[in-house]
Image (tube, rainbow, N blue to C red):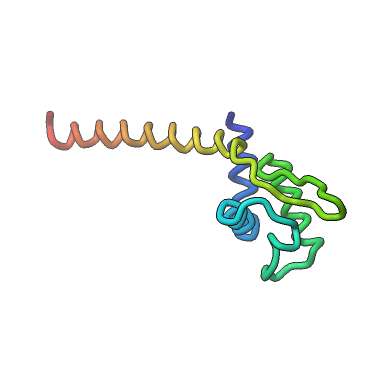
Amino acid sequence: MKESAALTFAALGEPVRLELVERLVRDGPQTISDLTDGLPMTRQGARKHLEVLEGAAIVQLEKSGRTQVVSLHPEAMRAAQDWMAASARAWIRRLDALQTLVEGD
């Protein structure tokens, strides 16, 4: 689980890739051209970012005729979500223990 979460965090840690994922969340599957419209990058640059996201299994690229359609694969982000939830629970326990100590209960 840690390796999968690490891949997800690494892939989403770059602002352009995070923007691409946000666009897919908001607008659904799109061609590469539509997805990257308005971003300051070449098609090759966009392709490299999409390869990183695909390598982390965050997106899926499918050929549709002569174009490629990019779709979100949100299940891949579950390991990162689970890691964050476990981390949050651990911190809540620590803060509760600190509160108990400070308040003298």
